[in-house]
Image 1 (cartoon, rainbow, N blue to C red):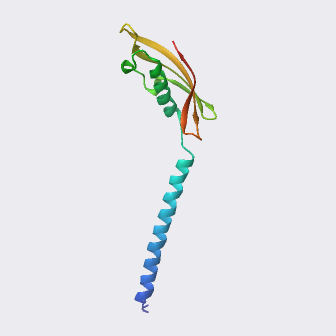
Image 2 (cartoon, rainbow, N blue to C red):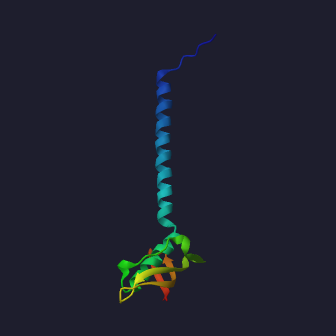
Image 3 (cartoon, one colour):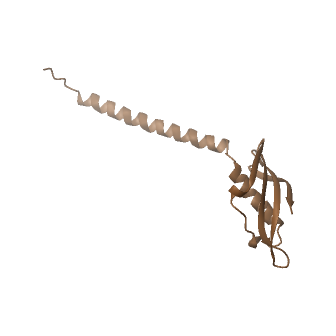
Length: 125
């Protein structure tokens, strides 16, 4: 039976090199994923629905009384090029204090260069 003697210095170099390589790999991976999410923000149907609710609330007589359904009760269509059409309803008080259901359709878009949502059209009935 042969025994191999490992030089302690060589073993130390291998361990130290492995640790350095792992740290560099983690740093590079973290920076790549962070920069990609900043460059390409992901906007989806849920984001469009939340922003549409804000635009509708601004048109209501009593926005604090607004009761919106969840996004499952809305028609949210991505029409392409960061544009959405959101159709749903809101229950809110009118000027006389009565709760009224208003149907709405909001056309909105997201501008990548300014990171802003833009209201293109709103219909509230």
